[in-house]
Amino acid sequence: MTAFILVPGMFTDTHVWRETAARLTAEGDEVHAVALTGTGGPRPAAADTIDLETHIADVLAVIDSVGAAPGRQIVLVGHDYGIHPVLGAADRRAERVGRIVYLDSGLPQDGVPALAAVPDPALREELAERAGTHGELPAPARDGWQRWGSTEGVPDAALDRLTASATPQPLRTLLQPLRLTGAAASLPLTGVLCNAGGSSIEMVQRGVDFGEPTLQVFTGPQVTFFELPTGHWPMLSLPAELAEVLRRAAAGGGHRLVAPDAAQPPAHLRPFLLDVPDIPRERTGHTDLYLPAAEGPRPAVVFVHGGPVSAEARPTPRDWPALTGYARYAAGQGVVGVTLDHRLYDVADYPLAAEDLDATLELVRADPRVDGQRIALWFFSGGGLLMADWLRQPPSWLRCLAASYPVLAPLPVLGPVDARFRPADAVPKAGALPLVITRVGRERPEIAATVEEFLTASRDCGAAVEVIDVPNAHHAFETIDLTPESRDAVHRGMRAVLDHLAV
Picture 1 (tube, rainbow, N blue to C red):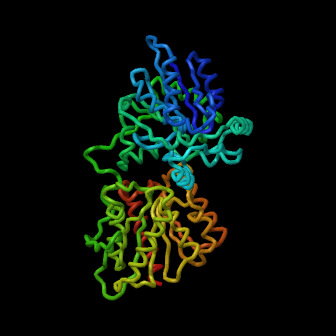
Picture 2: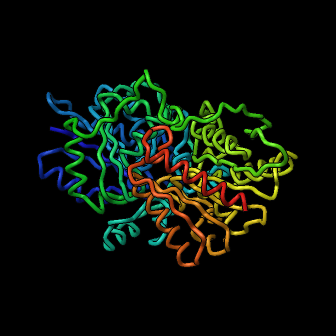
Picture 3: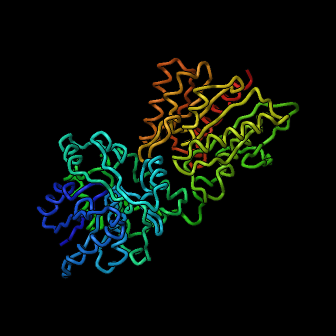
């Protein structure tokens, strides 16, 4: 027998588990839905007496109430915020726990408060300013749940119940750091990802391949993953399917990630797909110039990396083979290739990244070796949202905007982004500015949808867009798809950009 201990997320009570719990018990499993103090359980007169430790104690009490018996395993399931008290409790009762299930949740780390997982960056900043104070975070209104995660698939009646039973979240539960000793680090884990929010097993695997340190722990044989085609509340939208996934997880089922080959560099650090001239860089601050062997001021192409990228990533993006490859290719064609590091470490950092790009352009255009009246910007991946500023008010010296496998609308899984950075909203003001979009056929669906949204808006306003399709290529194909088709796409993109700079 399995004893499932189900821990809800922010603002929610045990009622959210009702249908899933009924399915599990019908199959003979034992189910305990935890009523967290202040949100589902007893509510003290003062919310400032409730913190993360209070909720960890709530989960510990349920673990301790489950009798030990041969063959019985305890599976802790944490949804959303609920993974924080789950991990805290597992750390103190590791010998009692058979598996931990992360249900569409973040990846809490020792010493980090749950505040870090709040999806809205503006709200994170507001709450951080209230550190040391007490009080509550009001529960969402019926139309406000989307701020906390996708509500796709949740029936209207279920959303009504969710809203009616919601309670404020005690602030100290979000502000108190999680403390872990590592005692539960070797326990079996399962991640259940909800695709409507933009998360997927493929995305996690790409993060592993990229070398993201926090994800490497999920490549062990004791870790499995499942996906559900729904939003952030699967217990309300797909209760039967969730119950089946939880039972399969308890049995050790699910997809296992592939650990990176220690003999191979991560995908983004593999060689560029073209042979390009070995042109040295000239570094000034966060900007690198690759200068052509040509007389007189030359046009420039500024290559803008994607993200978010961890501030600790080494080498930094401007030294990644794809970016240096493009810059050297451009310099070999007689124009100045430019790369930069910008501060897109989090989705809240797009304004900072935009400032860094502005500073690079000011530096580049002031250089006497650069024709400051002939500049092109070429964006990659998540850097695509930065296009919005240049679409909205294109200066006369900007001769072309290019983007490869771009993200052209905010992805829900990454959290809210400043409304300023929405290229589809800005493109009607682009006028005759030439646009070159490289679109890959094996793109992640959630990213492909943002490209289609942008192209639809472009067609509606008559924008000058050239689309270069690479049907068999993946996101960031320049170091992983070393095919004639991919090489041809890079050549075609560069030719298009250089043609616009020659005008």
